[in-house]
Amino acid sequence: MATAPRVLVVDDEQGIRQGCERVLKPLGYEVDQAGTIQEGRNRVESGAFDLVLIDVMLPDGRGIELLEPILARDPDTICIIITGYATVELAVQAIKQGAYDFLAKPFDADVLELAVSQGLEKRRLALEAKRLQAVEHQLDEAEREKDELNRLNQFKTNFMWMMAHELRSPLSATQSLVRTLLKGLAGPLTEKQHELISRVDLRLENLQSLVNDLLELAASKKPDVDLSSDRIDLAELLENVVNGLSPTASQKDVQLKYTRPASKVLIQSNADGLQTVVSNLLDNAIKYTPADGRVTINVYTQDDCVEMRIADTGIGIPPEEISHLGEEFFRAPNARHSGLPGTGLGLSIVKQILDRVGGRMDVESKLGKGTTVTVWIPEHMEATRPN
Image (tube, rainbow, N blue to C red; front, side, top):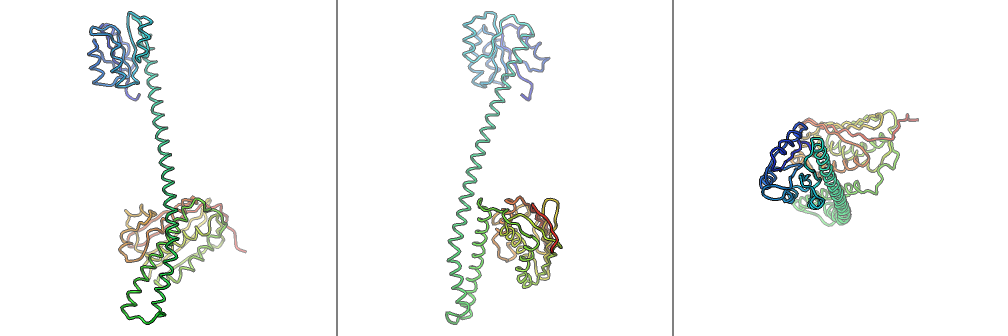
């Protein structure tokens, strides 16, 4: 009990009440008094007590009558019966009705102190046991909620996977037919028809991008995918991704600069997963960097991890939005208003993969100045000089 224990003495003898108070107050207890059953009942109703000393014979009845209202208010309250007429029958009756102990008058200070301290210790243990039971119940509830959340997340992942797979084939077929029309293979188009079908093609391209991102997100969440199964050279993987995205950067007039380390950077990871991380981060950097901008990629080896840093001179991210990066379908307001297509899933996929391989990501950005994304990937790594 954090506060001082509260003790109520219900006895018609003022000397007994005052004597109990003189013994208990110096021990740190708060002591209140009552001379009748009604006064005792009023005290109990107006405040909580940890322990109540009750005389059996009171002017308005038997003190045992107080046990029921006291224990109804708090079943862990310790009730000790005090009387000058102790009998076995009375003791049995009191214990049956919830009394903890029985003190026969006259009793000295040591006996009173021992009875009260033992009673309060019993209350403390009872309350602690209840607290532990409540904690255990909360833990059980939390575990059940966690299992339910995992089940729902798995259902969502499976649904995304199934839906994206079902959409991919008809989308590809439709896009193929639309592009056949745009090429004039089904007959010449008027300028207006070409414009309208081009818009359809753009919408299909955006939808195809969403489907692909949903598939990647679902794959990154699948528990049966081993994301530490390959021994790969991160330096070479980065170069391949950079070479693949160079035409896109050139088309936007964005300088893409990668300084490849002089040595291999071998890391135990999943090649496809890591390529997805790098591709998504670089694709974002290029997409949101205007013409005459630049994107730089650097890799550093540390004692227990590999650090990859991708910096751009793009539109940046508002400071208050950085904490939301990685949430599914989230795009910062300036990204949404830029007119550039996006699903808001790229960084979610990156975060899912990094979480599963024990990696982490940090984002620093200045609005209108650019963004630096730093990724740390635990290795099981070694750097070796090329032959």
